[in-house]
Length: 239
Ligand code: FES
Image 1: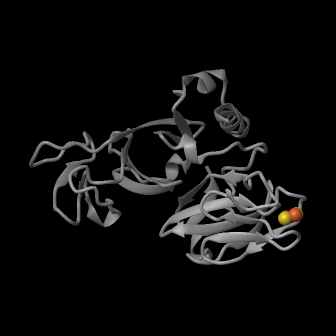
Image 2: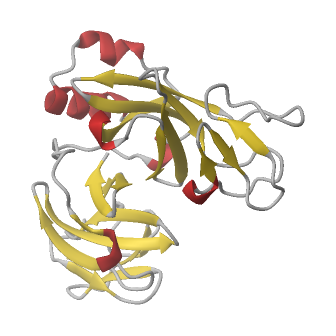
């Protein structure tokens, strides 16, 4: 499973064997897009699966990554809280340095995310996301947008034709997007939106969960293939 993901990444970015063996077994490296999309001295927040990652590009051109969650009250951090090289949690008003991750007024530190540049792209290694990242047999383009995020409502799956086939894209939580193959694993019919949480196949009645593609009702026995997405500047991409 992990090797397929890394192979897909390597194929698209022409990354060598070192990348494949550098990634810890429990972690996955995600492409967050072009480094130039983050201005010097500015930050961006990316949604990767169910994780939110803040990337800060310092004035000395270092790319630093943090989990975009306040470590004190566990609330999400937002770009509106960024001022210069600091980010302030909107709830408890604790400010953190984006250069060190440390809180300026108490003992607390943002969880750091390993970041590196490869061929001009920002790659972030996220632990614990492998479980939401099933096998990707194809090598989808990570640089071509799939759809504008605002076109995916939070209750209805949207069908999109992509380089890896027809996908059903759902917003399963606010800001969290899931892409599932539209091809039913029973006998290959196309599934369609059924309700807020499920997709259904009209051929023989299989029902799948939008959240992860798992089978809710047979005759299908295998989950729909899932593809991880990342949101960048209002568009969804394969990660
Ligand atoms: S092809 Fe989908 S249930 Fe049979």
